[in-house]
Amino acid sequence: MKRNEAVERWVAEMAALTGPDRVVWCDGSEEERRRLTQEALGTGQLLELNQEKLPGCYLHRSNPNDVARTEQLTFLCTRRKEDAGSTNNWMAPADAYARLSGIYKGALRGRTLYVVPFLMGPRGSKFSKVGVQVTDSIYVVLSMRIMTRMGDAALAELGTGDRFVKCLHSLADLNPERRFICHFPEDYTIWSVGSGYGGNALLGKKCFALRMAGWMGRQEGWLAEHMLIVGLERPDGRLSYVAGAFPSACGKTNLAMLVPPASYKGWKIHTVGDDIAWIRVGPDGRLWAINPEAGFFGVAPGTNPKTNTNAMGTFSSNSLFTNVALTPDRTVWWEGMEEPKAGAVGYFDWQGRPWSPGSGTRGAHPNARFTAPARQCPSISSQWEGPDGVPLSAILFGCRRSRLAPLVVESLNWRHGVYLGATIASETTAAAAGAVGVVRRDPMANLPFLGYNVGDYFRHWLSMETRCPKLPRIYRVNWFRVDGKGKFIWPGFGDNLRVLRWILDRCEGDAKATETPLGNLPTPEALDLAGLDLGPESMKTLLEVDRPGWTEAARQQEEFFQSIGPAMPRELVEEKDALVKRLGSA
Ligand code: SAT
Ligand code: MN
Image (cartoon, rainbow, N blue to C red; front, side, top):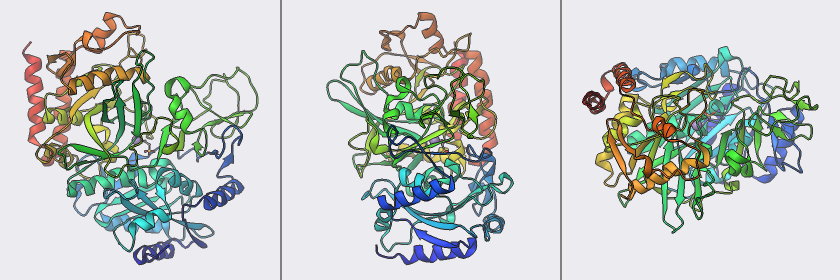
């Protein structure tokens, strides 16, 4: 491999700061994977799973204090505080560098510094971007190997250039008091210390592909979004792609690889991505999306052959499992899989403690994860590594709301669609540290991952109207309404295709809708409900427009918009005012 002086210089600097015993450059080869795996098995960072049933699969148990993203310890370090905006934690760059340097200093004494060049986006795509992560965690190296195009492939793409994102990572002492995830977009730099967990430590993912790329996209005229990408093919061969933003742990992975209901003969699903989309205006004037990642970092609990058989197929080999339970024959188990017999012996919980099913404690952590190569997905699209990506027919904004938000709403136009995305509120999940089930604002399901001021972000979304002549339509969806007993009303999973079908039909102009104050809702007949056990009462709830509820919601939106300050675009405040007016005129 040809040497890249800029990378070498930066690695030398990071080594001088952290003081490792050894520096190892990763090339991404199979031999290297084997060697690192052996080493991690030796230190106990990985445990071998049953190699007959799960070939190439290993279990990792993280420190129990380090099991989810820590948003309160995540900072944007821009020169001007306004550039971080009202929703991000901010630290002055000089302060952040000084504070974290103190923690990194000598932190790798007795350890190895691994150098991991990685590519976000397909090889040979002009939209792809290179990063180099240095880390002291083999688990991180092996995860990056699955989640990105790692090693020589990335250095080849960089050539002799010096435009790469510099990612410094150390577990240090895993002390939550000394844990920081800092982004310096002006310097193309990410510094993360004190955590080995996914979104905190695999720096190509949320830190680069959303926060850093968001910053770049704003300057370069494109969008970095927390979205799945999926192709839907009808029996007659028509194929349309949809991108969908949903908060963490709200079913993006399941939707990206859904299995059509039995009555949908001839329909095919083409998975392109399950978490992140980089979206640009193509030469044909449409929006085109690539998936910058090469793997899936999915929530394990709840995944089973019924809810997501394609995920089960994807992680059946060459995958890592984090914080799941271990079975007597050294396979993996989590809540939502078939319950073993109560009192069965030989199980271990996610912390490695002897555990028995039915004991009343959890086997897997609620945010337990699988890390699996996308190419192994049975429903992977033939286009998933296409250098130009795929053209989008519709954009979904999803939320998890047990009340209020209807099953699906079509926006009236682009601006209204941006408003629908900007005003998402969703119940929190175990993907981030903190309380679960609390409704919070999550604009574009991207709140935790914004790389700049949320007001400027809204403006950037609005500006697509002038940049893109053939915009896709925007829809807001909610699969999570519950009935009086707290049970989900909509069956979800594969049956979500019924809603997507209405959306595709709308985009092609032949499905019925009713205009409501919220936007266009399907008429109950326009949704295909054949074979579902859903009475008219249930459908009424799923498609109701709760005027008092939305009037109160609009008031809360007003507060949110005001909290954004001067960067808040007036257009979205006007959209809210227009909603209030529509709600008032019965
Ligand atoms: O750990 S990640 O942040 O990558 C997963 C998620 O919360 O979406
Ligand atoms: Mn995510």
